[in-house]
Amino acid sequence: MEKYSVRLDSFEGPMELLMHLIEKNKIDIYDIPIAELTEQYIEYLDQFREFNLEIASEFLLMATTLLQIKSRMMLPKPPKSQITDETDDIDPRQELIERILEYKRYKEVSNVLGDMQAQQERFFTRQPMELPVHHLPPDNLSMMDLLSAFNNVLAMHRELKIPDALVEPEEFTVPEKMELLLSLLNKHEGKLSFEEAFSSDNRSELITTFLAMLELIKLKSIRVWQQDKFSDIYISIRVGENE
Image 1 (tube, rainbow, N blue to C red):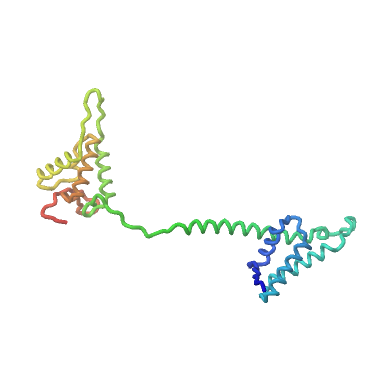
Image 2: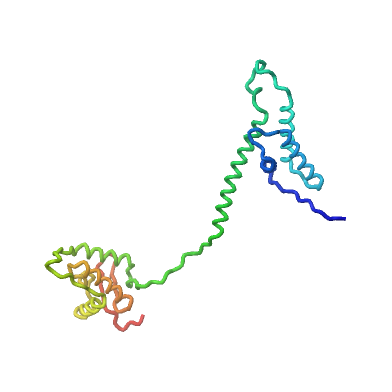
């Protein structure tokens, strides 16, 4: 005897089953052949009973609703001259059509959200990680504090603009400024204020000096510190420190 298997589609609710039948038979939602739809709907319920599957109460309630609409559709319509109430002229299928359209919109939104969730599941997040610091911060100052102090220096030193035709532009290098800064510290017994390190009126030279200072901090040759909050900032040579 040849073996065969029967597969029954599962539906979350009666509206999903109705949408399946409408799409399968390419039915116009606004002109539903209620007799045909009711017949196919009940056939599905009969298949569930045949395989001893429990039928939820909402499926049976929908079957009752379809039968009621079908019976109302089969009643002869009174002549328009005898219609006394506006409700008498309403299509019996209208409420069902509105419910189907609402469910259809709901499913469309659900599908869009499902696609968005599937896209999001392709990405993984992780906790923030610390990035390596290329320039060591000053001993008790944040890098933002140091940048703020340097901006104040730039504000005090407004560069005098001289025509290029009269004076050749000077070139400044970070290594030269590193040597100059160390030499200046030695002349001041290894310590000087932040403002004293920036005595030039040339903006390019000031920026180069600041980069030289950051490089010396990175090399642990100098330290930049502040005694108290809002007090003067000082630069000093590291002596006998192997940090």
